[in-house]
Figure 1 (cartoon, one colour):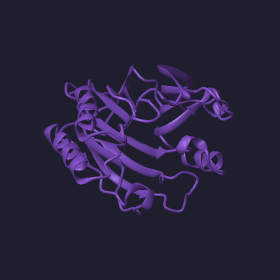
Figure 2: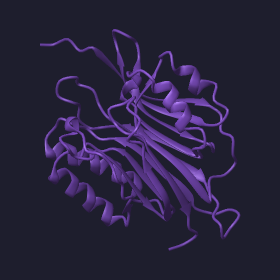
Figure 3: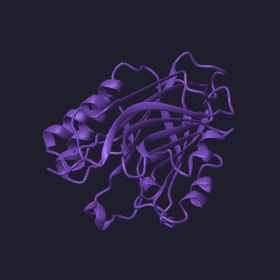
Length: 259
């Protein structure tokens, strides 16, 4: 039996400070699986990409690493990280991280019910809520729910569906605008079809992305963004950036007062 190189964490870490009081009506978003910050040039690319972003949604983010100062000393974003596991050899912790220009009203995380088969590690979801304004109103009673997630990968379809069901339970009772984004590991048709069926049931609309498929992702697209109560103004996939095995995705969204 292989000795595990990881220890469970499954906890939240809050860093930095937000620069704004309310989110909207325009919201600029960055979505990026940062590949545990392993590749050269990651820090320079990251700091350029987040400069004007209201929301930054990261998967395979790290903590207790040389990059911690970027987040702990930030005066532009509040950073909340849902930590999944700790590498016993390096002490670096891995999980998902959400940065926001507005302090979250609420935050919640949970780990996948099942673990990856070899590493025995779990994947996380992180839900955060923010006060919002629209072009029609100075302040809205509803809040923006942002769910940043990395869905479990090398497991059966049944276990994949169970984790996805867990994510959509978080969305189910929210009445305001929603952003659902992350690395969903939708590398086969059955996974993607189930994901789309759940999204349709909650009237979430997929943001259409033009991007380059990768051999390492089985020529399938793993990163997705779904929205409700927001208009998509612009979207750009940064296919010129190679400091991760995923391309960064930038979006400009606009809150609408009602549908």
